[in-house]
Length: 378
Image 1 (cartoon, one colour):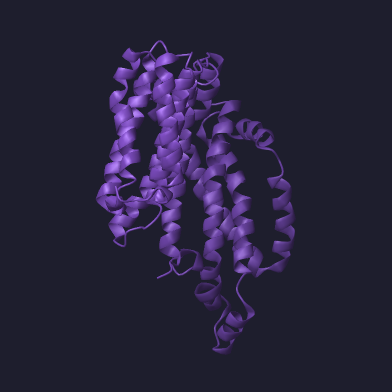
Image 2 (tube, one colour):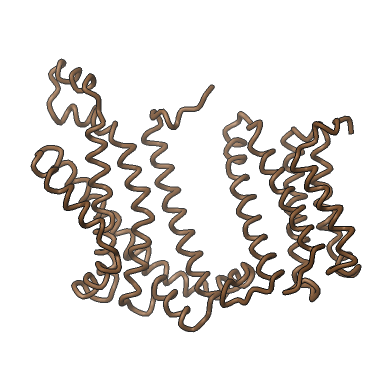
């Protein structure tokens, strides 16, 4: 070790202090030597993460990946402690000191992966995925440790392990719910609502009186709560997916309308004067200048609507649906106090919304690569 004391990262120093305190306090408090011996692989991996931070060669990508592997082993080892009778529901100071030390190790590893990014496109993409991945794993681990360590009843907050068991045991049920809510209601409603909003924005841009009339109506309808619209749509279109798609259309129409109109009005006077000076028609100026300038606004509306559409369909299912669907599953399982299945349905909705949003973000980057927000400093 040729690194000086002052060059040691702060997270490493604090993490080391808490790890030493945990090893001193645990045998005399909540963890007996038997439980502590079972955790030695995880504790050793945690110590390896902290020690590797002092090695100058740790700036190399291979050493960072080694740190990551040790960190994952440490997380797995500490999570294994919650099965101990001395921890479950009655964790003491030694256990929580170990958890805090683990948290500072996670902090340090995430900092390492956000500095000195590699130049290769594949390595750069990997580094960008690793940090949110590490954070997500740590969040789930902390959730497990807190719920089991404090003995929180599962009806209040089940640990992720029980939620994971519910997911694996109910894959066919969740697949049917996904098809009913996302495939049959969200996607058609999302497409129809955004196309209708975009078309109405083009008409409002072409004829000024439509813009002056539609925008106040849009603001008025946007202020109506979804719980007021959903039962009406169920009465109009029935209990199947059509009523949920209608709710999604209403929720996605006006954000697209407002954002598209704002985007079409964002073109500068110099750009439009240049198009007029070369004899461009209204539609030529629209296609070559105004629509490209409006694309960031349009994609912003699409990303907003990706969340609104899923929320609208799920809430609408609370007011009447066949015996399938994410919203139906949540409302039914809450009544049965089966909170693991409730959280499994919530996880399905969250993952679906995140994937939907991610696909739109990728499409936005492809279509608006020229926008200043996507330019990288050389």
